[in-house]
Length: 457
Ligand code: ATP
Image (cartoon, rainbow, N blue to C red; front, side, top):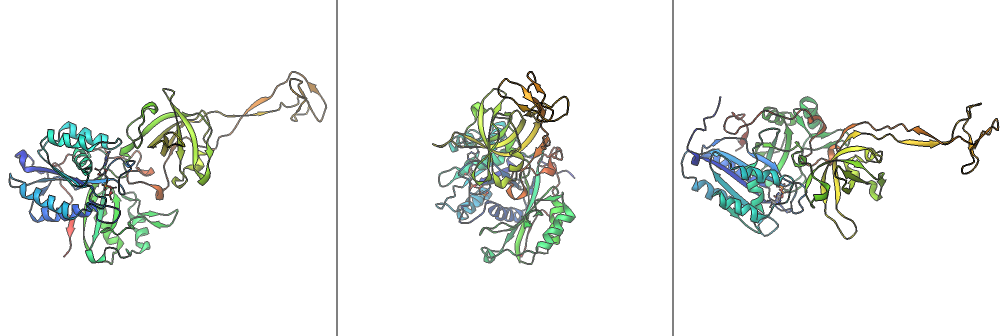
């Protein structure tokens, strides 16, 4: 069944908000849960799942995962002032303003999203954008906007609205704790998490790390999220809650559509001559210095792009990619996804590697002494330009030279991604490569899974 959105533009409201939390508490998705509860009661139509959009993960001022939220709704009244007022008040009340949060709220009243706002989102995935640019855009398109603190939250709020997520996407069900339980230990039976993984993977993913025997669905901070399960299908995610047999009395849950697990921040090819600190992207390059293992087990090497610009690249030990990286060799052709670490007084900019795709392995050689034509033994050098002598049959050959032997490379061409415990929100898990969703997801034209949201009690 399709939802009819053929209506007055003023009935459609896109609500974006960001930067409500600090490391001390609060959570932007919990605010989204509260606002959704309010809108649900008001009987508005949700034209899409709430969107949980992760933006450039390499910006230095993020609290945790650089996440922003967008809600797309259709209201009955032409005047959305009450809704906007409510959200603004909630944002102000539920943000850690003065303790590190700089919340922003943006509302766009229109069916169409201006191309410039979509472009703003594209840039926010890998570049650094200013709040001035965000404000100008809000003014140009007559958006209702509010910001607190230093106003940086406007960037995430507009970017979230501009993210249509109409090709690859994933889902996450977040369950929320009651206020009185926040800060207490989250208790879940790991056996149930393993069962969840075994019965639903790859429809759900990143729930359990078999290598390190770790449950991955529980956050660790004082925030109100009890657990989060990621996957490809809202119904499977909803059913997952039954498998987990959660004992804690929860406040409710909400299913988000998200760019988590899509690698969206690394989709732009960057030129090494133009890379800026804190940006993210990928480059096709050749290795020009052999890898060096440094203190901490990290691996460093220099790469050169097609325009012959060079840059230092590092593979950090926790990624689990250092064993592979240390076997790379000059001349190897690779594609790497990276975030740019800023230059310091000790080093220039460095590419922090997030994946390695080995395209071509260079042939490398060992130089060895020639073999005696009589007895097939390796000969010994007689000194520079004096030829070689066989130790066994004493033959001297003044003309023979060292020979090159092709060295066996134990590396295999292909894609290498970080180990599960080093995944960032946007990291595309290995199993999702080639399985990306391509179906066009047009908000308003899709029926949502009916149990995408529930508030208990
Ligand atoms: P959480 O994941 O727990 O919600 P967070 O990591 O999202 O927290 P925020 O508190 O939202 O952190 O802080 C991120 C800040 O960076 C916001 O103010 C957001 O507007 C801003 N921001 C996001 N992307 C960019 C970007 N590409 N350029 C500049 N600022 C950005």
